Length: 319
Figure 1 (cartoon, helix red, strand yellow):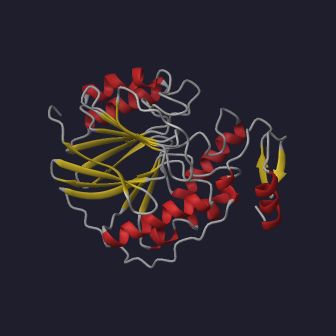
Figure 2: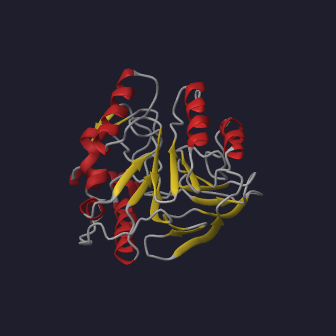
Figure 3: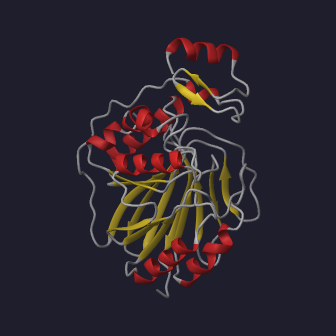
């Protein structure tokens, strides 16, 4: 968005608009009032980080997770800036992207503004980024244009497929695509069951954009927990991380699995703690996770460096 359009937006706001270009961004007529903070420019971090400063061994891994960070605005820059500052103190080699890394336009046209510029210090340090596709990553649906947008996004990030698994140190990660027309199709669920069965690492972590459990604006994704829970329980999955709702929330263990919503990458929406919530706050944040042997310690960190939550898990038995 150019400076003149941004000033007009901030002065008068935008209500529901037609499918028009606003400062080069295509705004759909169905969109409600856009969040002003999304369009206030922010200063990207100028940190110079030591490349490859993290340690990864068969028993040790440090990683971060962030969801819904794709505005390129001031708040996105602030969260990404704190991610760089945290790396300088406690380096990590992996960022789990929990979806919606691009709002308000094509990923090809917006990639520099919403991803490369905010994350430049981490990119330069050699940090790896792995993606679980979000619903705003190309305004996904079953259309050909959306499928093309997904393919472009996967190519830009070097993501191998719409759903896939990776291994780092003592952790196996499972990235799901919750945007299929029937949420999680039979083919994907069968693949997920087989991938979990084949996993031999101590820890199993699932990344999916839409939350199986949430007390936020969108709430628990209808039908998702029912589809996933039998597999998560069967294979003793430790942690499920998601975005979509723009808040931070950690649940009590549900059938042994802890669920975290970490959707505060660039904007916030209300959350009301429910009976499943240990912590639930409407705040900008990202998750920093250290795994040592059979212990996982996670911290949700705000842009100013303060802590929203800290929790510890022990690897589940019965693999």
